[in-house]
Image 1: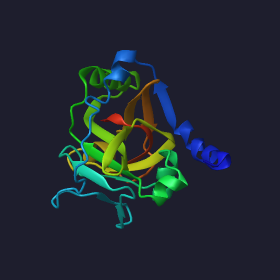
Image 2 (image 1 turned 60 degrees about the vertical axis):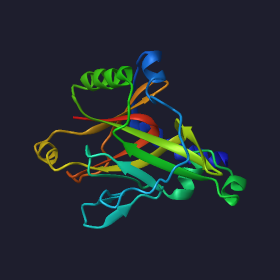
Image 3 (image 1 turned 90 degrees about the horizontal axis):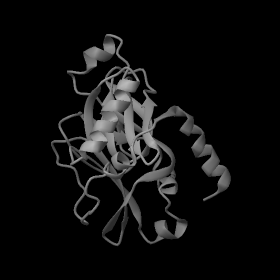
Image 4 (image 1 turned 180 degrees about the horizontal axis):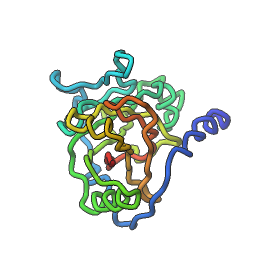
Length: 211
């Protein structure tokens, strides 16, 4: 990848604050890493788009499999080509059809990872609200390989369930927390819409919303 381009992407890394955790928690963040090459089309009743404060709809730039009732929707808004670059796809990869896929599910997040997320929340004077399994994959010839981290953060927006919106309106500040090899990464909300949480995400496997 072009070094200047990578440096530009990396500038958003300052949006993260790291909270150290045990190596065991990082190792169990992803749970079961075996992935079958299945159909990643989300069920029609579930959404891969969020409604922004101006009423427009943001569709995920990366095809996703969204299967959870814990949040209303989740999308990646960073341009597709940039996500592919940050995920390590070369020009040759793209030419022969290699792609990036994303999934957001209830999953089977390991107990150590959940505990690490809860501890990180407390360190921020917050509490754990939602834990999700979010995974990024490289799809090559029908085979999926999990991507644990991108070269720099990408932007994710989550549509909060209606029961949580009043807490935002009352002044509670939501953040996202993701488990990485270096600890739990805390990412602050970048938008002003009380119904959505937009944040920079670099590590994939276990993702939590805290407030």
